[in-house]
Length: 112
Image 1 (cartoon, rainbow, N blue to C red):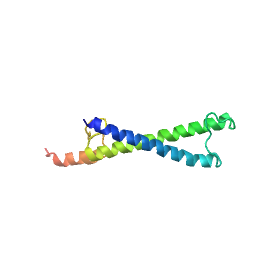
Image 2 (image 1 turned 90 degrees about the horizontal axis):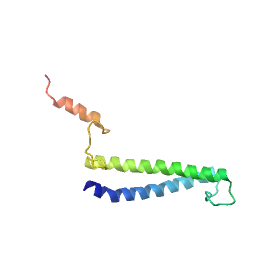
Image 3 (image 1 turned 120 degrees about the vertical axis):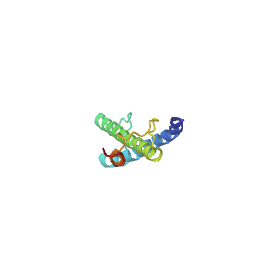
Image 4 (image 1 turned 45 degrees about the vertical axis):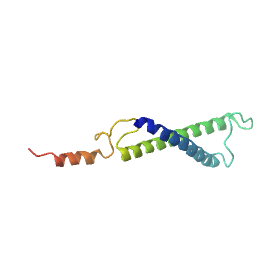
């Protein structure tokens, strides 16, 4: 059931990540491309190097932004619900705050 609820959120997060990466790419290309718009793959006025550079840069930016946005949404979900979006419960040894969990366990256990 939880995975079913996460699906629409994942779709929205993916769309936001894609839009954000497009905006970042356009701003970076204005600097790299000396103020011109990014070339289209079939642009006859531009050379191979410029077209491939634009495609590679766009791919890298898209992958980084999409990953960062998806990971951020997953971390937020884990913090709010205690469940990772794939449905697994939060595991103390694998969560970012595992040191606090282990410290609490040490102080709560009786000394022998």
